[in-house]
Length: 136
Image: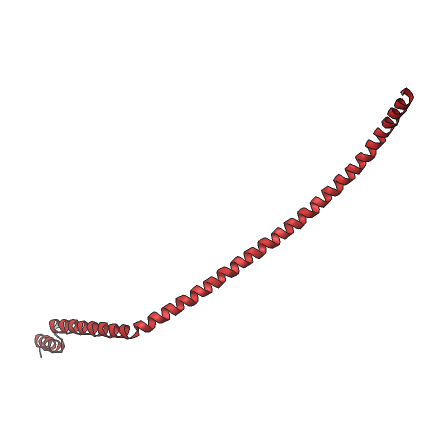
């Protein structure tokens, strides 16, 4: 065989094996279209069958989560109130001790002043009585 005839026969072989692009593309598009339609119908049917059950499950889940959040909020509030009570108690105790210290100090000052005032007034009072007794 000549080279030209050999190339011609190879070309004929490849053309016989090749699939026509137009028929392949149309078949693919039709298959995709039917597959999409069938898949959509199957999904819609499944959704219609399961929708009431899914809705009930979703509502139950929301209720559980709501109760859980409620309990967490209550616990948080109770913890905050307990902590505030503890801090108030500590503050009150600390202030009470400070007030008691101030009261003791004031009492000591008062006692000290009473003694010095009495020491100052007593001689004057005695002198006044002496004058009054002597003049009258």
